[in-house]
Image 1 (cartoon, one colour):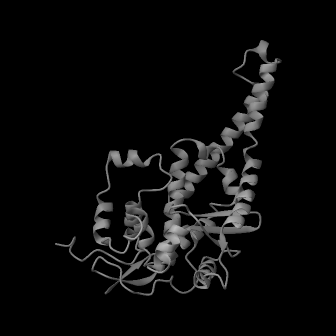
Image 2 (cartoon, helix red, strand yellow):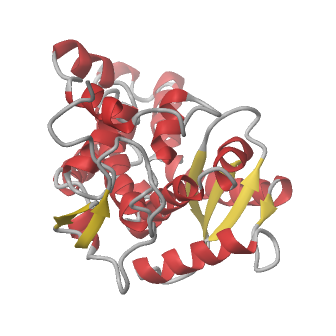
Image 3 (tube, helix red, strand yellow):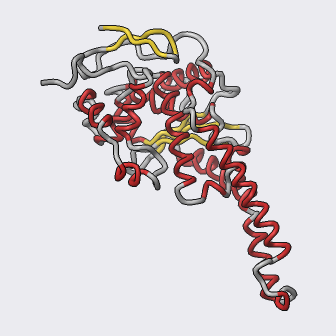
Length: 309
């Protein structure tokens, strides 16, 4: 065993056999670093760009609805003009529609999923409580377990007065007993979204239109995922299986050699790799894993001296 230090906390123990070993896998004691230190450095500048673009789109919609600049003068008092103007005004209804979607989504989750409590999966509930305290969240998120119908998925969301995280059964059952650190990574990742306000109404309104532009929206989404990954890894530094599971699938995450997967991530470069990722809302899983090791948040490292013989 050796120690690796990083800018995100005190030195942590790491292993050199390419596989996970039993170790303390909780976050360092005390409050987590400021969000700015765990957030990907490109996220805020790109978010500001997207907000400016969003405002420009809204102004363009309002201007087009009032002036109809592309319509010939003789048609501006016709039924066609009224129809086009109504269509532009309807585009502005996206903001109240967001509110409806957020509220009905939580109502649906409450009606179809199991809410964790001090007596319902109490160990994971307590983990969520501790994570919320470590991250300095102003309110404790509700945690739900749902039937994912085969999907390996989890998400964080917000409704009026409530933050919540939904874990699919497929993720939960694979990690709950076999590798709870991986489940804690996923829970920490989703709580990172909450801490960074990715699920807040003001945030979603700020990029409501610009985020729907192809390539731009996915690019911002990937940056959010990288930032939340850092929170998950900070809170569960031995939780690599939370990402390995997404790459290799169910029942295999404990058999994958982390050192070889890291080498695969380091070799994931080039024009075609970048092109393939452009429309994706999440970065390539092996790249996400490799980046968390690179910044020192995950604790298992490849064997010294390079890949195994």
